[in-house]
Length: 138
Image (tube, rainbow, N blue to C red; front, side, top):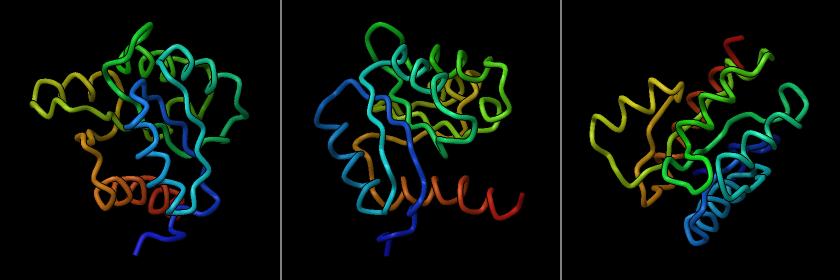
């Protein structure tokens, strides 16, 4: 049961495909999260940079986006001079589940690789693993 497991959590979602954006937003909001949607990597970096430290609990990042892709956006977030930029869980969302894609995501600083189409239970499990368990262990 996923209802309410992400209550009080705020998640930044970067996704250029409207359908994928809606599905992801629905899954996260159904689990109780607050969702901020942006349509490309550049907007994602700006949104994160403008946020308070610790305001976001996780970032879901599409890899293939116009203007700035998810790998570059992740590298830029990770290089920001603030504590949460190094630690926030960033999940790659991609239809390419090949191991070299996973390798590139990890090298860019992402924590996990979520395959599209997004599977609700898998997504919630990853987020819980990083946010809930991580916060509890701090």
